[in-house]
Length: 358
Image: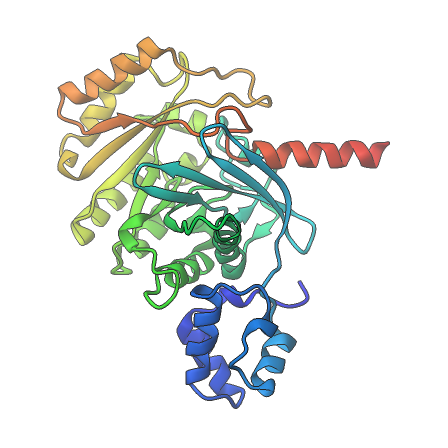
């Protein structure tokens, strides 16, 4: 990458860098305002900066490093963006419309090494981590799209649930969170941001100690080690005996609720037996637990897996409710486009390979 994205700097980092390079502290406030309040797309639009400051910025940073490759729009208002990075890699970002606001799902890595057997994102191994700037720029590109529609809409919620494992790119992810949460910038409230992890227990302890109000979701998908290892290779490194103490530490340290993500796959993890095992697992922490039941989105590469029937989903849901486990079934978005995370990217890479062979 020739020059990094300026979006990768927190306001404090931007101020320190400008001062180190001979600029006044207040220049950081001006630049920040241009980036996140006025949301300019080039340094030349920052008309109250002197030429020295402008040249310094241009020589060291870029504002735009992502290029929109594909944009798919669903009938329900969901928009899936495929962005091309400067090194030719592709990532996905999704805008979803809810009654409470506009939520964007961001990607943190190019590919994924977690290796969940049901997931399109992990079909291709991790190529690299995204920088904090590349993660922030996903939000900015979506916001620029909204600005161009002249409807005065703004991104109000963020879920860090796209391609990759956020806790495997911890430092860049934290820089991203600090930038989008900054009250003088996008000012997206911490409680409107959710980070999802597949269960890197060591990083869950670290995240609990950050002292932030950002929500945590844990991709669980199975209530016992045998089944979870079959579905998620990460369970070999962090089996439930290591993972659940990290959950307990997080709950005790933060007193904040954890959402347990549970994808329901037909005749794999959707039996009443698994529902009862899940109840047993969460019984001593149900006051701070919420189970998000997710109907499986079929992926062409995983033909062995099918979506649970409505009957099985309902029965699973009822068992949890009967045992006072708070839960819900996720409302689906973008089912008429490439709904599963990673599908659009995978299709684009397959097309590129076909062209190379031709």
